[in-house]
Length: 294
Image 1 (spheres, rainbow, N blue to C red):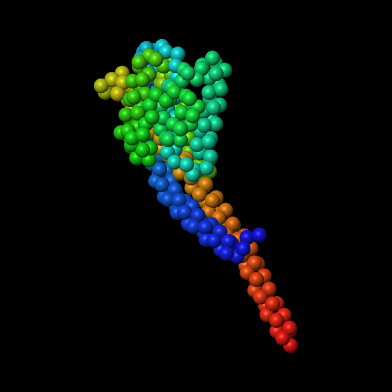
Image 2 (cartoon, rainbow, N blue to C red):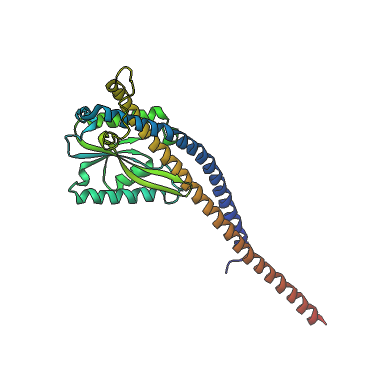
C-alpha cells in the first residue's frame, strides 16, 4: 500500500495533468467554435454553386460529356486526397479515418485494384506517418501552410494541383477522404468522388431553367464556374475535417479531465484514511505510554 507521502505526490501529479487537460479542452472549445462557424457559413455557398453547376450542365446537355473533367481518365491509377490531423490527443479521430481507409482499400482490392495503383495527396502528419508505415505511395505531402492556417487560396491551389494531376491522364479518378462534421458528437469519415465531375453535377438535370437569360452564354459561365465549384469542395472538406478534429479533441480532453477529477477524489479518500489511521495509531501509542508510566 502507498504511503501518505507517495499519495500526496500522486495527488499533485494528477492535479497537474488535470490543469493541462482542462486548458486543452478550453483551447479546443474556442477553436471548435471558430471552425464550426466557418464551416456552417460556407455550406450555403457550396450548395448554391453545386446547384448552378447542375443546372448549367443540364442546359448544355451532351456537350458536357466531352469535357476532360467530366469523363474518366485514361489511366488505371487512382488519386486520393486524405485529410487527418497534425497532432494527436483527439480521441478516435485519426483511428476512424484509417479504419475507413482500410475498408476502402479492401473494396478496391475486391475490384482488382492493387495498392500500388493508388497515390495519395496528404494533409496532416498522422496520415503521412500511417501511409508511410503501410508502405503506401504518398505523391504529395502538403505541409505548408499547416492545416489550421489553410484558407480558400490554399484550398484552391490544392484543387488546381489535383485537376492538373487528373488531366495528365495517369489517373482514372480522384477521390477525397475526409471527416464530415454532422454534430458536436458525430463526425463521420467518408470517401467522396472529386473527379470526374459528372458523377456529382452533370447527372442532375431536374433544376435546369431553360427560360433564364444568361450573359455572356451558358458555356462561358459553366467553364468559369467549374474551377470555383471544385475549389469550394476542397475548402469545405478541409473545414469540416478541422471542425471534426477539434470536436473530437474537446470531447477527449473533457473525458480526461473528468477522469482526473475522479482519480483525485479516490486518492484523497485513500490519503485521508491513511492519515487518520496514522493519527489514531499515534494517539493509541500515547495513551499506551501514559498507562505504562502509571
